[in-house]
Image (tube, rainbow, N blue to C red; front, side, top):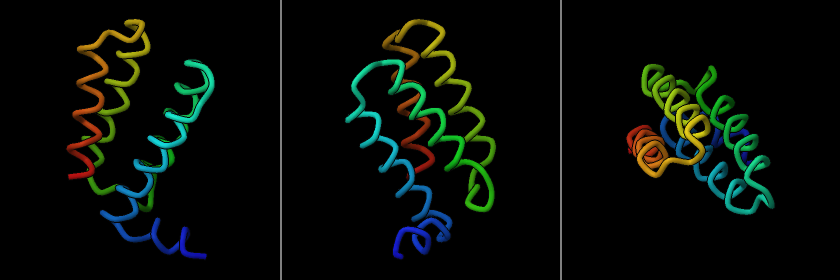
Length: 89
């Protein structure tokens, strides 16, 4: 019951969503599953009604795509994590 209420609060809901996504990715058993879970969760967190920073969400999705395309390049992964932190902050 608390989960739907938390997701409706603009900043808190997005921070909760990203934290939940991070936990799901950490607990995944394969890299492919981790990428799939992260992509679906981030799209869900950046979709209406809780979009607070639409441009930052688009930048985050582009950087996650770059990290996957580059095969997990540390610079690309660091940029994606930095974008997620900016959205949460």
